[in-house]
Structures are given as structure tokens and as C-alpha cells.
Length: 212
Image (cartoon, rainbow, N blue to C red; front, side):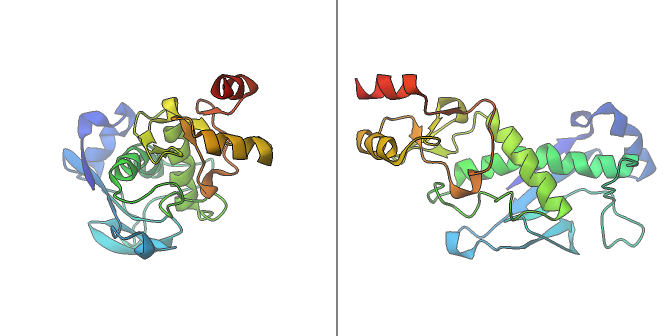
């Protein structure tokens, strides 16, 4: 899955880099994964038109029009507070277009998303690249309109329509699963430590309205 990005889509602070690094007016971001759930790798690679010798714990291969380091084998990616413009440019690609594209990939995924290995686990995506994409992905998910939340009725809804089955006793959990309200979502295991600001969870009021 690929997204083309015009120069005008980039923050103005990056426009000088197009001339400095002879970047074309149209850049791209792409994600690649085998369509079989069992073939999703635990580690993947980074590409910038050609494969780079960089492995990451993110579950799909990531391509983008990165600004490369002088050795042409890595990307400019300064993780310190003294980041240069090139590092900030590359981080923007990984934290803005890449997560948006990833949500589109999830929405079109032909298999169940409930426990899909496509959901990156923040506790396992700890290398700097995977951590940046994963953290950015879940921030984007919180406000996304993509139908990527799978309900207990196996219907996909957007995050704003979902109610997460978390923070309740086993007894209440069992009752809700029996009742199967149409907006109830069992969070994938990868979400267990994530705090969402916008996605709702089960509350006493929700429980009361459901059992009426």
C-alpha cells in the first residue's frame, strides 16, 4: 500500500530540504506485508527505494523517501534533543504519513483484526524506529475515522463508535459478552497498556443501558 506526497503536503520548515537534497516534488511512503496472517514477521526492514540494512521490530516493511546518511546505508535519525532538519524530516515521515497509511492497511486487512499480529505491541517495539511508528500509530488511532476496531459481533467500527471491554470484573465481562452489544470491542492484547484519550471504555452507565 502506497501514498504519494506532494511537496505542499510537507510542513513549510522542510521545503528548503527539497532543494538541498535534490528531492523530487512528489515523494512516497509505502508499507508491505504478506497478506497471510501467519506470515507477518516479528522483524521487518526499512527501505528507501532500495532495502537498507536496518531491521526494526515493527510488523511490516516500511519504505519512504528518506534523507539518507552519508554512508547511504542508514537514514538521518538523531534521537537526541539536538536534532537536525534532516532527522526531523525523517521522523515526520515515520510519525505522520506512515501511521495514517498503516491505519488504511488495517482497515483493508482481509482477516480478523481482533488478535492480529499487525497490531504492534509497544512492549516489544522498543528499537527507536519501531517505537516512534508504534507510538504515533496509537495516537492516530485514538482520533481516526478508519473502521479498524472489531466488535464482539465481528463487525468493524471506527474508534469513535467503539466501547472497549476493559476495566471490568470477570463476571461483568461474561455478561457483556453474552449480551454482545453492537459497539463492544475486545481490545487486542497489544493494546493492554495503552491509554486512549478518546476511545471509550465500559462505564457503569454503559453497563446499565446495555442490561436494560
